[in-house]
View 1 (tube, rainbow, N blue to C red):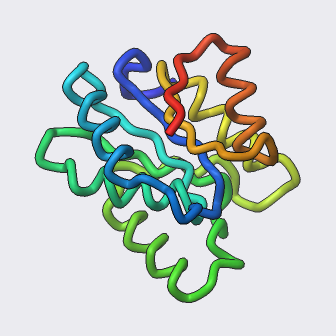
View 2 (spheres, rainbow, N blue to C red):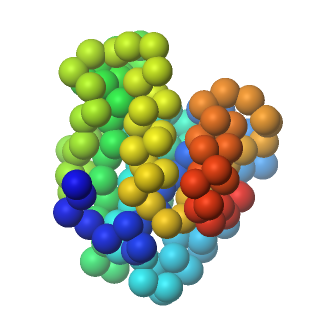
Length: 153
């Protein structure tokens, strides 16, 4: 059970590597449009790359009365992040309105569980997917299966 409305909730999924042509301005515009259309809650998976970039962009929208929820697959998600990534991650966690931790420990499949949680509790998914591989592909396919609206960046 969640304490937010799925119909006004959006989640993000995307690759860990941001390509040179990644368009942060377009991401910001998409988020602005979602907020204009009544979206109030944003679920972020907290992985390096797209997730943390989406979180940073969301922070710039704080004045628009939104909630940013950090969806952490396991307590030590940042264990193998480098120092810069750990700092970025800690800043995001510290600035989240709420942190949802789905598992005490890492296990094979905990990232997929996190993705399913986010998709199940959202009505729309913003996806940064330039290759049909990995967790992003799986999350997008799951969202399609669940009939969710998907906005591709």
